[in-house]
Amino acid sequence: MAKGVLCVLSGFSGSGKGTIMKEVVNRYDYALSVSATTRKPREGEQEGVSYFFLTTDEFKSMIAENGFIEWAQYVGNYYGTPRAYVEEKLSAGKDVILEIEPQGAMQVKEQYPDAVLIFVLPPSGEELYRRLTGRGTETEEVIRSRMKRASEEAAYIDQYDYVVINDDLGESVEAVHAIIRSARERRSAHAEATERICSEIKIMVP
Image (cartoon, rainbow, N blue to C red; front, top):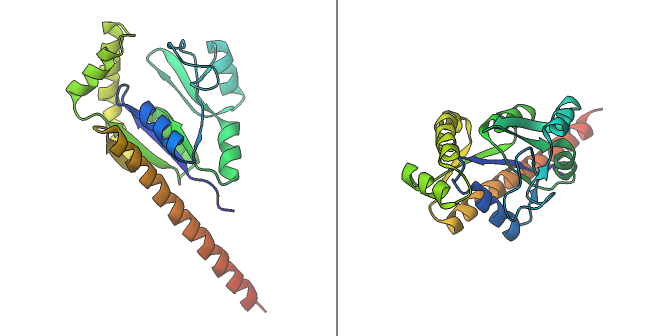
């Protein structure tokens, strides 16, 4: 059985990457890796569904035990991807989507060179600011911090395999699905060809 495709979805805070990811998982048969974080839950977020909400000490203990595929600190909080779930799903041939920051995405690429990295952009800088302020959950200071962070994260975009501009949610969801499906088809074709060639060589050996 061919291993599943590991897809990393990143983007500026407010780009809509979380909404895209949820829609892709709802519409298609992908496994969603739930991240761990030390930030406080927002209204409506559920433990083990939105995130695993950990204390800073709990998070650091998992780092020490190599319990994360990747982890990063972002705007004063820690975020990380628990290793066990991802490894289990990939080995079972399931495609897995991770929603993580660029720092973490680079860590994933080092460990999984075949991972597909997608960066989600807003249609414009003005639209990004409007989306952040429209949440109504964060102070102006935090919003400025997120905009500054977006400017810093832009330096990573060239290291991603694909960019999706999230102007229309439906189109963005289909674009992400098409990218993962294409990677899956290439991997399956390679796996079949590899098995065939190796079998032919084995028969030819005296």
